[in-house]
Length: 106
Image 1: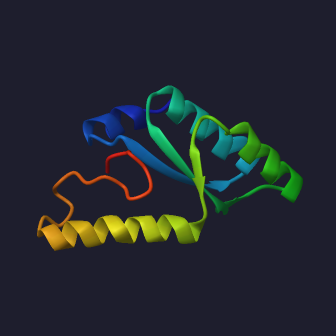
Image 2: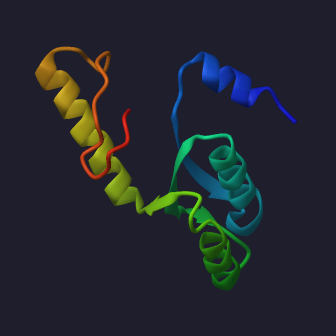
């Protein structure tokens, strides 16, 4: 119901990293919608929260198959690897690079 998909596509965004509140409501809905629209979605599971641990876990379970799940530490490490490769190539992120732990492009 927003123009976010239109904006992201015009910016050539293919991947989304999602975190927030509430894991079992807004986050899960956003992840499912993004995956249905064809985005490659990563959820930073320890950067999400719900009203209870049980509801948080149920939300994460409900996203299974729609995204990959990483911790904040893993996500930061992945961002750093991509930045290091871009710096080494002298392209400062302008050249498409593959994420170290997946076959997804950034």
